[in-house]
Length: 214
Image 1 (tube, rainbow, N blue to C red):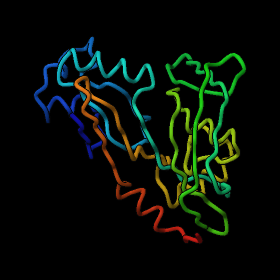
Image 2 (image 1 turned 90 degrees about the vertical axis):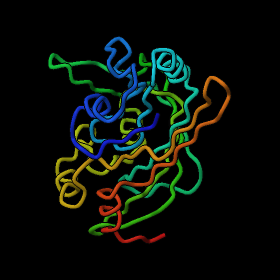
Image 3 (image 1 turned 60 degrees about the vertical axis):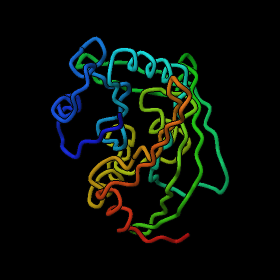
C-alpha cells in the first residue's frame, strides 16, 4: 500500500490510524514501514500489509531492486547530460543518536546518477533542478554526493556548511528541497508497481518563486 501523510507526526502512528494492516501493529516488522525518508524529504512511503510483504519488500530494498528517483534543487549550474557520482560513503552516529555521512575511502560503495531538468535564478544566483536516481541506498546519499560534486541542496541544514547561503535559502524555501518523485518495483507475483508523485505545494511554491531561465 502506498500512503502519504500531510501532517507533521510520527508516520507509523498516522498509518495505524488511517489503515488496518496487521504489520502496522508489529514492532519487529518496523510497524509495516519498509523504508525511510529523511525527516525533511517528501514523497511516497511503501507500507507492508503483513509480515510476508514486509520481509519481501525489505529484501528488494536491501538488494537495490527498488527504483527510486528524486527531484532536488541545487546551487550552481549543472552541465547538460547524465552524470554519475561514484564515491564511497561512511555514516557515523554521535552520542545523541544523530547520523552524519561523509565521503570516505573506507566507506560503503555508493553511486548516484543525476541530470539537469531545469535551470533557475534566485537573487542573482544560478540554481539547477535535477532528477536524481539512486544506484545504491546509503544514508543521506543524495545530499552528500551532490555537495561532494559542488552542488549543495537548497536549504540543507546539515550538509551545506555555508551559513550565509543557508540563511538566504530559508527566506524562500522553508525546508530541504528534496522530493521522492518516482518509485517502482515488482511485486512477488511479477506485477510491476510504478508511482509518480508530483512536487508538494510548499516546494512547488518555492520553485515558482525562482525565475526559470531554461
